[in-house]
Image (cartoon, rainbow, N blue to C red; front, top):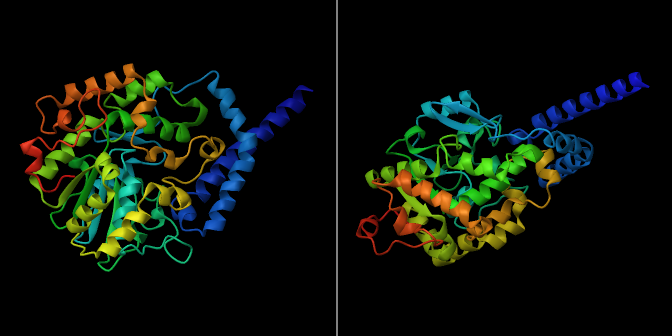
Length: 379
């Protein structure tokens, strides 16, 4: 009987390991994102099927073991999600020489990256961008995530040039000092309320780490520390704000401003990219960049390829983070901890935190600040 149990357990672990490896290889980069929609759906269905037998094991493990921080790697003092990013991919990013047709979409994680990618993509195509099977198929089949290439998007060297200007839309979460910079390239930085960012990070890490995700207390400690992926929110925002102050080829965007007036934000981004769009084209871009449109076509925008955890946790969906009021999902004490952390780190710095994100309030447009209104490259 004992021998039979050992044989069954051995067979199960061989099955578990082989299936996890198989799905990792089959969904890596454009092995998944470049597939037609029907094939992507089929792959997700296969993962869900096998997930019924694999996921319970990780639930059992989580009863005796929980991570203290999300799995991470380090490079030059900056962390990144383990497996998705490597020292090799960070080194490539650090040494890349930006080209004149490069458009970098830079953010701290969960601050509106994919939304801005879609806005830029549609602007470059005058509201006629095609992510269907007869087009680019998926946002990450055309827009490389430079510091995770080639695991989480189309490999950088195979990224297509899009639109009438043959532009390359590059996603990055790198802090300003580690992001490749050139006066010839263009950079759009998007930030979001630090409390809302934290709420969305909880969902994201849960999809990556599964049942063994750090508990909420440890997630808060991680978020308010130098172990936070791509640097903590205050340092990340400060670095890109300073870059915006010094360079006109950097546009600084607040997520909440886009939610408040998307047409105005689209016009600002189009002007920044020197794309002269008609009013009809602006309206098309606004429609295809709306939360409703992107939710309806969510399968074109999922920000990472499927895994056992993401497919078994059906209550956590990618587009649920599109609401502007995610800060409501955070307790008062957590919110206070985050805001005090940001205030302490940004004291005597350049980014005017209190003007945009005053303590106890969701967002302010900062229009009363002469420092802000004098900067034309800020939304």
